[in-house]
Image: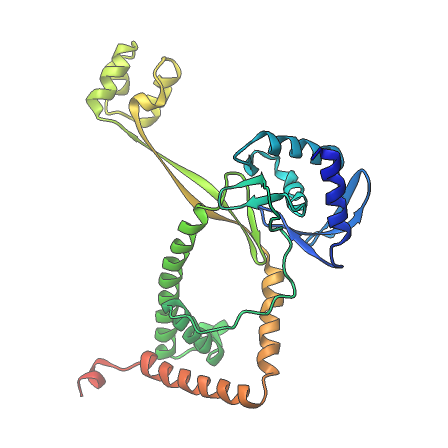
Length: 320
């Protein structure tokens, strides 16, 4: 099929979208809606910014050519940062599919999935996770609600001990879980492409560490380049760097360099977090009937657990 045929099939798919349908960009995971479909452009609006933006037909054609020229699919991270909506919209065409794990958009022989969010999907059933950080967080929330932590100096010693213990446990267990999450995210993030979620965004970052090689080896290489041994006696890193600037030696000749990649938080949306928290509070306040009774029982069990795990006892009491 020619691009002209594919373009008009895409416009038909866009016209058939349900009102209010939300799409999500690959890689950056930004949400947007289709506002208008025209012969030469598609008008979209970002969900977080409400800014209207035209996506031009000629840019879709360029993307189409690149995809059809690549048998294994076109790599999405080769697109400019602001071009993320184009493959998301093109995926509405039944012959184009995005594989986020592989980071490509591919032309397929059969109908494919799209980047439309299913807003009408049934909410997933909630269950209590078997995680230390979850239990510790519940205990911490309870402790924060029991005491006025805005005036720590007025709190009893046992309450401060409990609060410090819970804060320490939550920090440790949350960090362990954060590292596990980061390992999975590293397989899905691409360099220089922040990925957004409702509460914020993260991006893949490279950390670079340098350490000088064996002192004799470094001195020998510098001497071979005409740098007097006395000039860098003791192998001061700044002096070695100065010497590199006036020689043909590369950084790797005198440094062992290790690069490690990690996930870094790029942004936090405090407004979304506050809205979510308020919704949870309202949901809790509106709980009635059998659900309310179950909630009260859970709270009583939690209070028993708190008393058991966080009660402060002196050494004398322990041994009595």
